[in-house]
Image 1 (cartoon, rainbow, N blue to C red):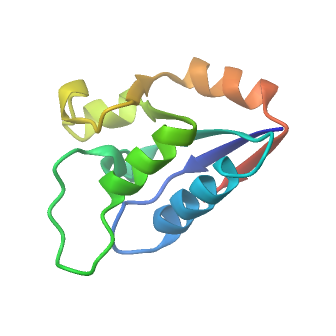
Image 2 (cartoon, rainbow, N blue to C red; image 1 turned 120 degrees about the vertical axis):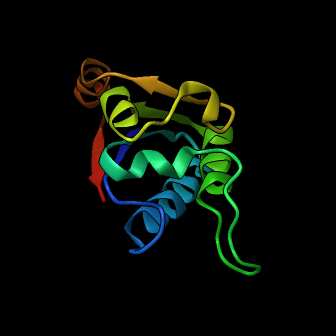
Length: 115
């Protein structure tokens, strides 16, 4: 089964993206599951490498790396450009994508979960 997670919120301030990444990671560990995560809007900042957070606080970049280990992570290229985020600033495995890519992922997904 293929599940697509679409995240829209910033990595910090609300816990929507945090919870979406947690759920995507958990689903990716289940048998016969394929996970794709698409980051849009402010959620593209979740995949920025080198985030510095207070001790004991979650690091969205590290969470994206964990999802990449068991699935695919794509970022809206237009949203990245609007926020001044370059491809070289992303965590390894996270990739710039387009709305056409999201449409293709959506068309083949068995489930789509939006945060």
